[in-house]
Amino acid sequence: MTTHVKPQRGLSTMPPYKPGKPIEEVQREYGIQDVIKLASNENPLGPSPKAVEAIRDALSEINLYPDSMSYNLRQAIAEHLGVRREQVAVGNGADGIIMQTCMAYLDDDCELLVSQSSFPVYDKFALAMRATLVKTPLTADYRLDLEAMADAITDRTKLIIVCNPNNPTGTIVLTDKVAAFMARVPDSALVIFDEAYYEFVDDARYPDTLQYVLEGRENVIVMRTLSKAYGLAGVRLGYGVADPTVLAPLYQVKGVFEVNRLAQAAGIAALQDEAFLKKSIAANRAGQQYLYRAFERLGLDYVPGYGNFVLVEFGPQALDVQERLLAQGIIVRPCVNYDLPTFLRISVGDEDQNARLVEALENVL
Ligand SMILES: *Cc1c(COP(=O)(O)O)cnc(C)c1O
Image 1 (cartoon, protein in one colour):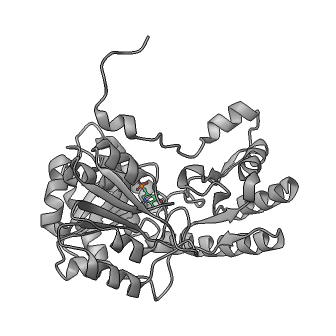
Image 2 (tube, rainbow, N blue to C red):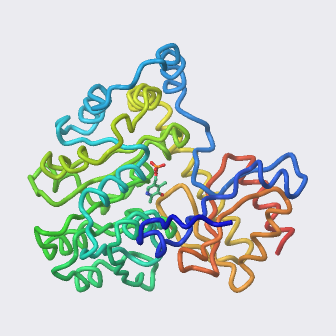
């Protein structure tokens, strides 16, 4: 039996989003207990301990609705960034900000402009709003091609998303290219800089996009998350920084209590946990270098990147390698639905996990 009640038209155009395979599923299917997941760019050090403590303290109040405007959390984010609270919106993960923005801005006569081989959640919500997707190819060195993106702007372009560092390639676009791009974006198009991996980037050429908001540009949202470097993927908290006039429509559409009480408490505490942040960044850098050296030893090409993951080329047998890693209890991410079918995206794990991955790859290859 199938229902005769038709879902709204946008859904028929939406490809299914495949999240990383859950550990429990691999345990069940392969009968292995000791499974590790290097597929969703989660923090291998666990969550910020200060956030965990704040959640514990907040637990006795979960009978109460959260503050729907997340006043204290937005204030804390604003202070952390040196902006005003009115310039900060929060969401159920950065995904929540993407959803709010698509709901708030896209109509069925609008275009969403993104790069190929970028984060697929944009497509999902834009298609749900029945907007048209416009995609430009990556450059030969796996970066977003901002010139091609600027060339693709039309008078129907409403939303442009620049994922920087880009997931799944890990590459960044640099200050000069971003400046040239922004000079070509009309005031009628909104640009989201998706900086989910911002904290991991250590490169003087990485653009300071908050500057656009601080200068008063009314068509820019800088979006970040506490899921990655702060280790809070499970409580779902992301934020967008923009001119208050840009954010007002997001407040109109957001879930009334979209960011829950535990997430608000955790976010405030995590932002003060500089020790944890430093440790995350250092562990990621060391793990990434370790993996790079191992891939070189194994004769594997990879894309040097800036996130907490590595994009590795395996040629036509990429999915085969992924399956055989699964059989050894290691979950990595195929990149078929990122238009990169010969690659696997591998999250940087802790020392043991990275060593286990390398050993498994040695067996598989
Ligand atoms: C992980 C990720 C997000 C989503 O983060 P959440 O805050 O967990 O929703 C957004 N954009 C990119 C590029 C990501 O990799």
